[in-house]
Image 1 (tube, rainbow, N blue to C red):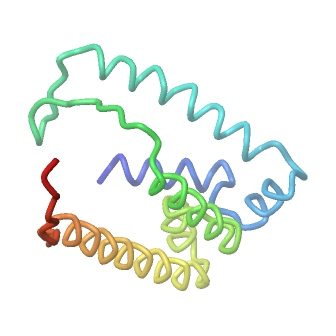
Image 2: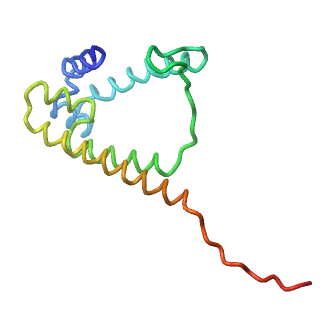
Image 3: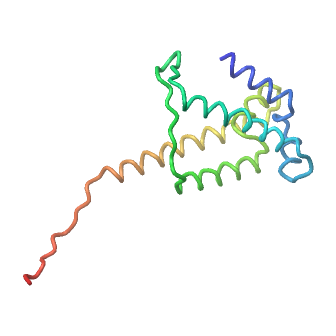
Length: 146
């Protein structure tokens, strides 16, 4: 909980919970948004590398495993949907909570949209996994003798 509060405060104090800052960044008017992303990557990439090299243990769930996965269609389509929502709403899921906490009532509408998106994604994932687990009836084919 305290990590979330610190993260939300950081988003708010850096302006990442302000629609105008996000909007100006997406229109390439200011580099603030991109500098923050680069700084985040500069911290996150080395930390993931360290997590992958060590035998770290979580206080809650035991060993920490960093896995890699090839880029798949679901990653590209998910990124496009996420980016479209971010451009329309002017916020990402992390910042929308900071926006709501700072008293911006439109953030509640965006939060509802995030919630609906999560539910739709879960339904799609469930449907896809059911389709993959169902046996496929392959008709018998008579092969003529040679």
